[in-house]
Image 1 (cartoon, rainbow, N blue to C red):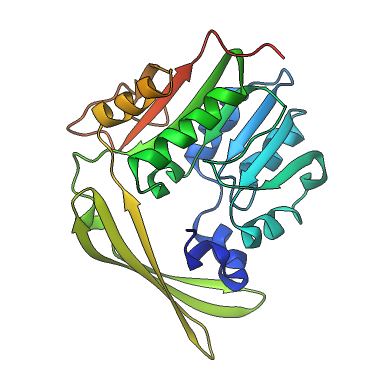
Image 2 (image 1 turned 30 degrees about the vertical axis):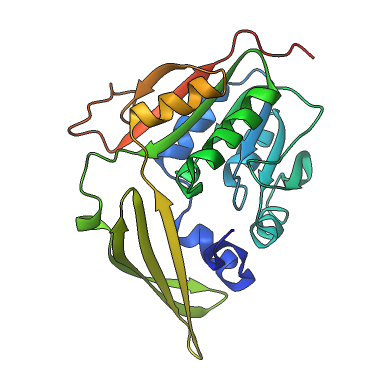
Length: 246
């Protein structure tokens, strides 16, 4: 199930204001280089990265389960050069094969069951071209994310002021539960969210079950080596050398 943070059209319009282009976007954009490639962006959200890929001449398919997010994406510059698909990471299937498959914004953590992650990885493997790459990131579960999770910020959209607040609620094993409040001039919208923290060993187990293997694990957006004690992220690169040529 996709939470209201993504499916509510009013909130989708605000998404880029607090989750816009940043250093991780630069990292993923540079992965593709400048030679045109076939790229699959799973969990594309509002399409910032997909449209940036298209602007460089890449052939992009962008998949997201939330129609509200895709509606925002389709209005962006260069959006007409992207193939947009409403589907989940677990169920998406296409005859196309890709040189690069990405899943950004910690979207893998929105898959709350190990079976869902496995299904997502199987989707990636199915669509990967021989010698292609899969790259995704998750937060490092060894760090204390709860201590820095709460924040508040002011947003403005179409001259409307909105106050956004994020609150940590609880940890339930590997699951973190939290809420957002969006205070509009005339109403308050509260959304409830859950993400799953996965250890590197758990991710490697799911990769192996999908017939994949991590080639590299980095700990930062400037290609720092992963250090379990200090790295905020696990940025995982996977190659499947027996992928499909077609």
